Length: 227
Image (cartoon, rainbow, N blue to C red; front, side, top):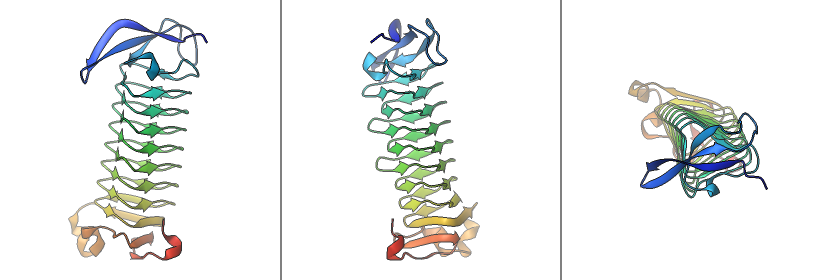
């Protein structure tokens, strides 16, 4: 197998680890032979197969592994596993044990400790924690924190915290804590605490045994809808 990159003598220290800028040895995808890339800790971090590449000043640290056609740009930091056609850019971070793959796209200051895949998109200061999964066409933005699941065509933004599941065509923004289910065509928007009087659950969150599937009406979960 012909190697597609080599480590140069240009280094950068990050988290007490020495990283080496890479240099392309052949043309592939939009990369030309001789082109400099980002920084990796060892050759094991980036596959010589496929069109995967680390661009700009992105940093890749052990135990990270980037392969297939995944691409990392700008000042992103990777410590996890990125593959498929995933794109990571800006100052996004993928932590150890995290997996980002398929056509997932991370931008801005999004951080991932869980799994993001399908056509999911993360932006803003979104945080995806250890056991969380975000997939399908889900969109996470703002300062949303995901500990549970977001999938389908759902979108979660604002300062929402999801411990349960948001899916279907649900749209959630503002200040919410979701421990139950939000799905269907549910629409939750709360821009401030003045909305508490309109809906008790806006103050204390959506409980584990409750769901919202149309507008913002909270009902008890039926066994058939448990997810």
